[in-house]
Length: 346
Image 1 (tube, rainbow, N blue to C red):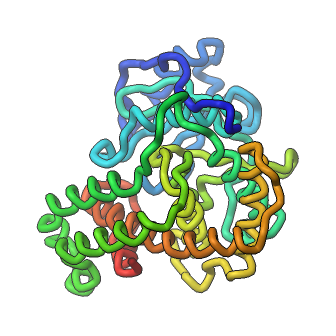
Image 2 (tube, rainbow, N blue to C red):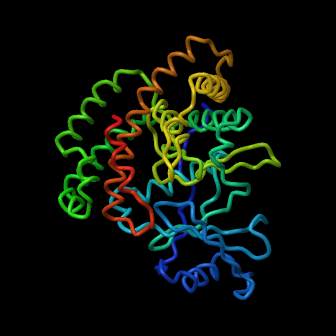
């Protein structure tokens, strides 16, 4: 994919309606009357997916959810526009789709987007550890990482800009957040000064690792991976944080997700043997997709392994800041406060 330049497609259709997150059915039917005018309202079925911890996601279909034509309606979480660039998200949707790595986006509306349903099943923690599955994931990430920026443009890693933005938001709301914390939870949250010093320390060290800047998903937890057993393939969904970033961050972030989301258990973090096998499959795919010799050496695997171990700390710190923000703003029923202590892992 090295010869192809990433870029957004045509201007996306925008439907000027707002869908009530508490009673979304009427607004969704209005939206579908424009996207799927041949669908009869009485035949439309809706399924609410519960995996999301930032947004509401509703599948709309006639007949079966697994048939072509199903529309996913995603309602943005409250105040997420503070830390998610929605224009960039749409652009990333178009880039991933243009390169055969993601679903088609159909339209945007005032508080969300509609896009194609990716057929298959959401990955679970057990499947994540199966060699036949994690090698597919590694290979797909290698393909995505090979997508080049728009022709003639260079790409800067998202990490430090996004992390600095998170930290600024945390500083602005920290006193308000703390008033709602229990005393035990409060003790787990570092001060703003400590967080700032940790970020600068990470930046000084990790900026010197020579990890290349590539197109990254940046949020590859199990619920963002769809496995199609019939076709023997995986696809990544949800591009709220997708952008150019450090190669090792995307991989290290994914390895952290082996520990789970609802019941975090870091004893499930992948073993060194699994990581090296994963990284070998990744490098084979990445080299193939960038038109290079596919042979992977032990030294190359070791170098990437070291980089990934380091960037996994940045991932913990990044999502620790995110958890502080979500605990303040989100209306989703999820214990974000429990994730805040992950900042200490950095």
